[in-house]
Image: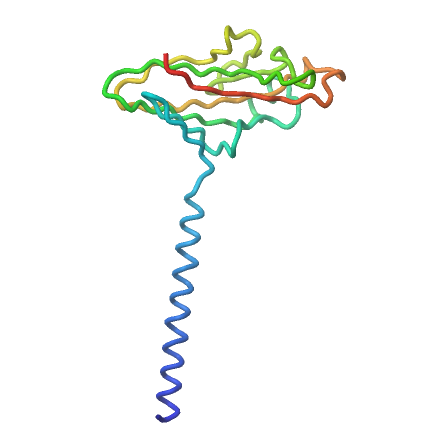
Length: 171
């Protein structure tokens, strides 16, 4: 073999290797950018998806006023899909985890649905903040915002935890 044919083979091997590595990097990037941290819960007649839940409900880190909470509190997008060819009634229920004396009370937590008027969680009967009917194979998207009311907390609430449970129930 002469030098030019060896050089051509090495250049071709290098070129194919470079193309292969580039394709691998692109495919990896595409798969990682499309993956979300969604939490999907299958119920009897509906499927509930908590978008970008990252294992829990997003709340503000610090207490916010009513106005700040409506503007700055992180959104929790909940997608409810009907799996049946008939209508299904459902409700969204928010409760707090009362594990010990270090849990924040419901009368210090605001909840807002679809950027509507925020309400104190303790004023909502049985924690039912939203009800709706899904027609056959329909999907409903609900935006929940939850924040601690800065005007209702005091120094005795320092160090208390905010344990929130959001559940979508079929009626």
